[in-house]
Image (cartoon, rainbow, N blue to C red):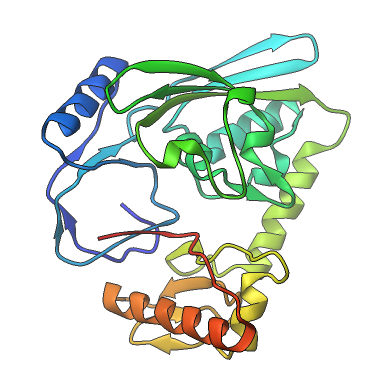
Length: 276
């Protein structure tokens, strides 16, 4: 249940398909005093080895969506399990502007909202109109964009609760949206190691330098321990060469943080989420 294919087993995983089931699971996790952990496709998540006893809740069966048009604006109301691929298909079909730079990110709408995913200068928060969010007590709130404090790879939804549904605001475009998306996907294929299981960007970009540049400068591009490595294609991508172990990945992260800290006096902040 994570794209880098590393880690142990979950003791329990739940698959809600309705608001009532989400509400019940949140209340159950609260009563049992277990950490509630939503799961999309796990594209920025790494699990430790062994059995992990958290309240894992998958968005696999939350894939309903609808589209409303008001003038030149289109509103895509998507449950949290709707994939970016599905949104990309809609955007290409209707030639809508606003999502094109995000199109190649391997994510679900819910997971992308929680981490405020972004690419090519666009973040999902730029196109969010509303978020339907359950708090930890199981109460549903509908939050307007100006009520939500997003920042670089951060949102208030990372702390607790469950993003159930998101409304994206896009507009009709005179640009050739299909061509823009195609170009971005080609660039991703050239620059990113998509032929290996990966968790995407390992570290957030510090203010002065991209994390990939720093990792390359400290000699970690292509550096591996066991069957886990920093990619030779993009140093900020950890890849599973086959049979990779969590302890190998964790050691690589520790080495990267130490080397960049010693040589550049920069404290790297992880973009991937490690679940132990």
